Length: 224
Image 1 (tube, rainbow, N blue to C red):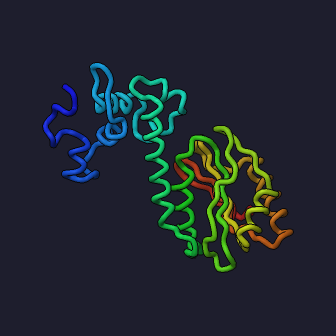
Image 2: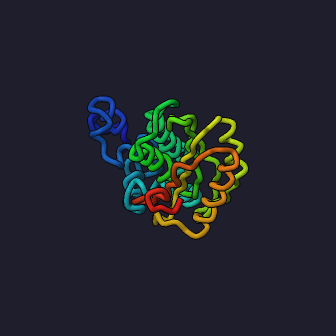
Image 3: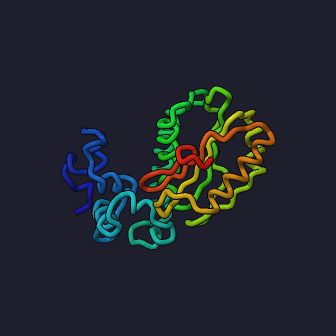
């Protein structure tokens, strides 16, 4: 039976409007973005099939584009809506850290970077630019790579740091594989960046690796 023939309180979109988004199941939320079904299947049927196949929402939304686009019932338009929802949520979380807020609290900066980087499928290297009082000047995702690696250019970090007139920087990158442990390449890159930034009087506050779950702090480990 098509969703529009269901009782109003059973239709995902109408249920959200009448009772609030919190009461919807994962499948119902996904169905709202899918919007339409296929022959013999409603959008909710497809959403349930996707969750059954991938296990949970996180695994589903972290699936490589080519794989998800090849799934029955998920075309480019629906895929774009799902990815837009993720990015909108990420920006919503980022809005809680306006320019000028002090990031002298390690928990606050870690939470923000975790929310920003953990869900990326590929490795992303980001910088948080701060003034002398640890106030946020800008957050930029500067380099993106494959699922295992990214290429980092200290000169570009210096350029962006000077552009923001930054006095301090928090470096961060994610490990899509999940393990939040630094590789020898991570350690070497951190050393090179630190030496390069010292030449223009910009200090590195920390280098955080965001795993899934867990994190690693170069500062806490005493190897910065």
